[in-house]
Image (cartoon, rainbow, N blue to C red):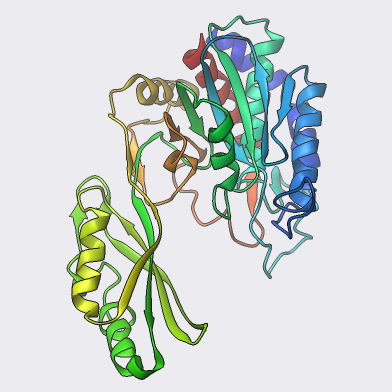
Length: 367
């Protein structure tokens, strides 16, 4: 069956590349919410196009009030899924070609969203299409979920989970290979001060953030975990808000320290300044030998011949709030710093390899 699935993916690949070029040509940067488009006109256009293509491929599709949507195959009381997203980050400067041109050169496609994350979620869709075209009957329903707010706050997935049960197994093609068995916790802390305490305020942020190591050493939160690595503080922001001086910092932390300890340490050092936890996602961790992780590892190794030993990530994905899913692809070892930069790219060969991995993975999880 493995050989049949891989061969069928190769057969449908020209159509897959054609449809990926269609979806990445849509500017789906978040914009002002309008009626029936909670994340703006462009993202809704991309969602409708993704669902239209899904229907053209013979899938039933569901639009959940334009918060997100999904294509489905098969029936069952339980389902497995791949969940990616159609929204993209702003384009920025430095592009050699228009950022939504779907420009192809020397076997590479360049456009905002080709890697993060339209290309990979369409690789999942066409991986499932290969299974459908082979007439494979699965014991569980499979959903390809098209998110619309991954870059800006996960409001799409929060809406989904208010109306739908989570999958029993799944993955998000929005990180790297091999399979990710654990994600760090992520938090944003906010420190604010009235104008009469500006001296104390600036002394605090200089001593513990700006002029300090970004591992939180001065705060006493410099945990170095053998699985996750070291605490990292970044994305510092300083501004005035409603008459207050406000400083924000993002903290990526390993599972061996709690957010309560982090906030407590900040409060100890901040003394009379106000410290708040503005947003927070707990660490995610699966056992390396659980069915989900082992299955994805096996599929990755079978298709690529590479070592698929599970790894951790400093990033944050839908796995933060969607139960029972892990990050899985699309970037291969050595591919870094592509997704949010100018000239975002993905090779056609890698797209096809991803589709093979995802087809086999969905088959193994749902058969």
